Every structure is written in structure tokens, then in C-alpha cells.
Length: 112
Length: 111
Image (cartoon, rainbow over all chains, first blue to last red; front, top):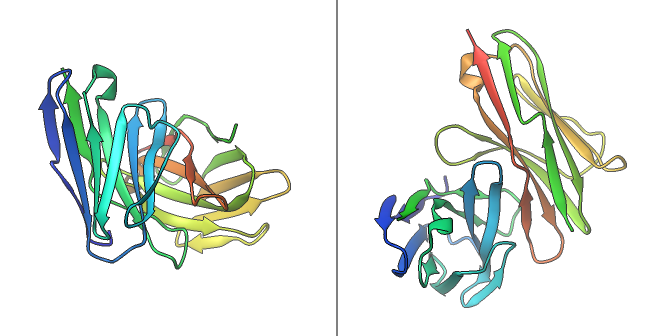
């Protein structure tokens, strides 16, 4: 699993509140990704990072922002959570040596 | 628009059966195709394919890519209950290092 952890693992919040999810990796991988997984949609890319302070949008980036101030940490922020953002969020990391992505354990977010 | 389609969406088989899972894609700037297995947790890597016609094999699982017809298959022989999972296919592009995942195939193996 390339030493990838996510926090929190579960969160319940209310509509309109800000939420930050954290992904931490210990293998010094260059690339990091945030996905959401919903029934019928598989894994969809939200944002990704190709280095410290270098990030780009994925296919479902609206309502989300990210930051990467250190190689090991990639933060996903929902500025004002909505019920449509209820999902399971996975972080992944990838090194320069190949296309294999290593996934974190996931965060289950419920927005009421 | 880039897309990855997996079929079937779900499959129920008996132990000992052989199954074939399909992944077709329509993307520009293809670099590689990956297969993952997801049980009730994070996806775990199975195979990476970059060249047509070269089979990758690991135990009872094997996979092959056809870059002309734009698809890959994942075969599982002599299935076991432990093979029950969602199998995900992902295509990696050369531009921006982006990954596009299919919706997955849910496989259930009955004893």
C-alpha cells in the first residue's frame, strides 16, 4: 500500500460546512490523486498533483480544492459541503517508475 | 470525450468456473491499461499492460491487451470464493498523467 494513510476514515457533516480530508504517504512518490467512488460511476478523478504546489483538475473537480505544500501530504477541501458530495474518497500515490497507483484505505464522507 | 467501459457490470459464477472480464476504451494519447481488484476496501493492483498481444499472468489470473481493437480482457480460471470482488480497469494517458477508470465488474463466486 506504499504507506498511504487517510484521515479521517469516516466523517458525518452538515450541508454548508467546510471539510478537509488528508492523505499522507511515506514513500516520497511524486504523483498524488484524489478520487471519489460512487455506485454506478466507478472511481472518478477529482484533482491530482505532480509535485509540491503543482496540481491540476480532474473530471469532477467542481466544489473541491486541493493543496500540496509537502511531498508527503495532499489535502482535499470541500469549501461548502453538499449532499451530492456524500461518497467514499480515495487517495492514491504513484512514483516516477511506472503507472501503478497505490491507494489509501478510503474516507467515507456523509453530508446531511 | 475519453471513456472506459467494462462489461459485464456484474457476474455470478460457481467455484471452479472460468470467467472473462472485458474493458474497452476510447481515449486519445493512450499510454497503458491497468487492472485492479477491489474487495471491501481500497483497490489493489493486478496488472499493467502497455503492448498488444503480450499476456501478463499471475497464478490463475491473466490479462491481455489489443491496442488495435482498443480493449483488454482479464481471465480468471478455476475461480474461488476469494475471487469475489469488483474488478476495475483504468487507462492512463500520456498527457497530464491522468487515469480514467471504468465502472467496474462485480464478480461473485458461489461455493
